[in-house]
Structures are given as C-alpha cells and as structure tokens.
Length: 114
Figure (tube, rainbow, N blue to C red):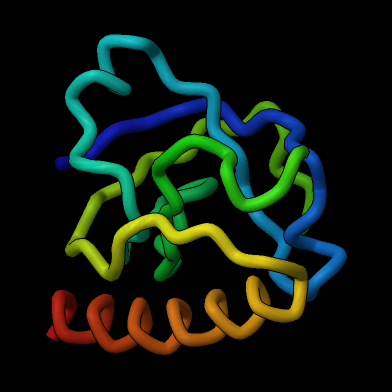
C-alpha cells in the first residue's frame, strides 16, 4: 500500500526524546484503507528522495498530548508490520521502544530494497 499526505505540525514530543517525527494530514478515504494500528516499516519519499522510516498508525495513547518539511507532500509505502501499539509509562520506556523499532525498521527496509 502506498499513500501520500501533507506534513503538519504535531506535538513535537518525539524531538524532545531524540526522535523527530513527520506528522501527515491524510484524507479520510485513505485512513479507512490503512492496515491495522501498529508500527510499520515504510519507505517515505520527500522532495524526490526516499528514506527508510517507521510509521506509527494509531490513536495517541502513549501520552496526553529532518529539516523543515511542513507543507510538503510525503509519499509513504508500507513495507511490513513491525509491532502492535503498546502504552508506555514514561519517556524513557518510549525512547527504548522507538530504538528497538528503528533497528527492526532498518532491517525490514534493507531487505525490501535488496
């Protein structure tokens, strides 16, 4: 599955723990076609360049609330499911979880491109 969206401002929490994110505004018709909530390995194209990425798709249950790409269109190709959504207790746990996700995403992305 591949979809596109426009980059919008988020809560900026990811950047405070060392993982800046890209938040996308996507059409409702795309949301209904997306796979089950979870973390996915993706290939993301920004300004014509492809990057390996991790997609979190789900409700913001974790907390209560590269360069400037706001307003840019990003195309996302979902490669594979990495894990289900989990709730963490604090920023430390979230940082550890994201670190594991990034390792798994890099492996999945590299395999998909070899």
